Image 1 (cartoon, rainbow, N blue to C red):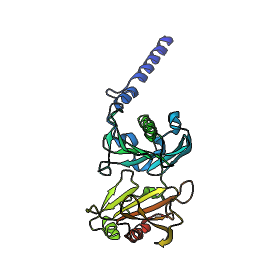
Image 2 (cartoon, rainbow, N blue to C red; image 1 turned 90 degrees about the vertical axis):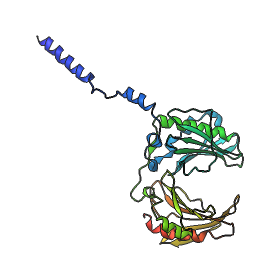
Image 3 (cartoon, rainbow, N blue to C red; image 1 turned 45 degrees about the vertical axis):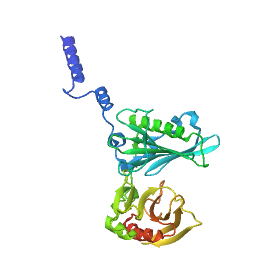
Image 4 (tube, rainbow, N blue to C red; image 1 turned 180 degrees about the vertical axis):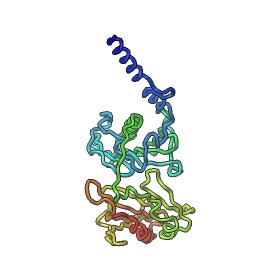
Length: 324
């Protein structure tokens, strides 16, 4: 009698473990369902402003044909970069630079018919020059990741093969759910929305462009203001970690809103544009593993024009809103 009771209890326990609510998918069913769902940027990448772009790449997974890794991956809030060396040529690969239909308007893109990734992903070919090659990977909501392979020697050997290999690794990692995210501290500029640091009216007044409107990039760390006229002044605000790239030979040190500031006037060689960059590293997370800086870039039609006046005026509006 005791043995029968024990057997009955065991059978009840087993049946309880095996039971599930009607209509609730098993893990295998859930995975199969997800594998057929169109992949939006939210599904594939999660929260875009906190995306860790270095989780989208793995240089060790690249084929030997692209060359050995020379510089380990280093991240920003907009991209991840690493270096390769092929036949004595240094190549920099950047993965990230989120775009959408609005920010890509007018950018040359051609569908890559050789590739047919799953879940509605689309690979497009961008510009292909002797010294760089661009690829785009678009999600079904038209948000796209950019891959750039660039020779640091002026010209490179088959840079598009490098970009294509980086695209393959990136797609594999997205589909395998290997995407990671950053955590911003309270003092990080990464928590700010650059298009909301100042109002459109404040930006328009500072750069002298009536009717200027903001263009927000999907990463959440870059904003651009431009007027309705194609020849109007353009201003961009970048919130990013990393080391400044300003030229000590041409940069002027100044102070705006109590913050140490570097101002660099230059021009765009390939176009009739004057450019000025105003940046401060006296903001955000300045201790620990990541240093942050804030950059304002202003472009004015005409190489002889003053681009630094508008840049300084915009900095006077932006700097007081920064943490630190």
